[in-house]
Image 1 (tube, rainbow, N blue to C red):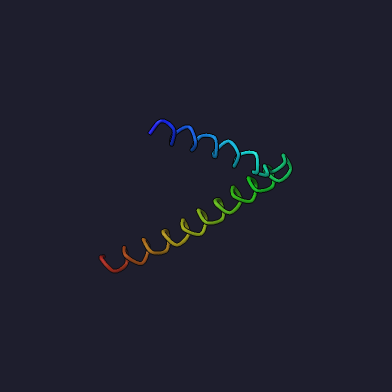
Image 2 (cartoon, rainbow, N blue to C red):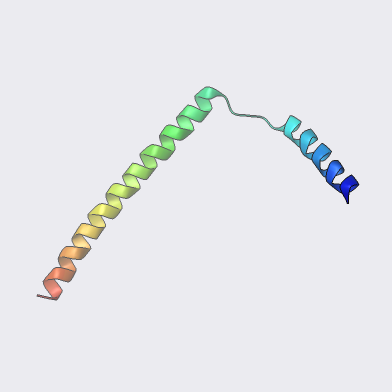
Length: 61
């Protein structure tokens, strides 16, 4: 069992050497895209929530 664990960790180390990590510019642009997308979706959901609550309030008055 210990031999299997050691082999697994050696394979993990080899796989990490194959990984191509993104550069700073790539990470920055991806982060900005995620933040902008999140803000846009939050705004759209807020507007929908507002109008749906207005509609429900008018139904139950």
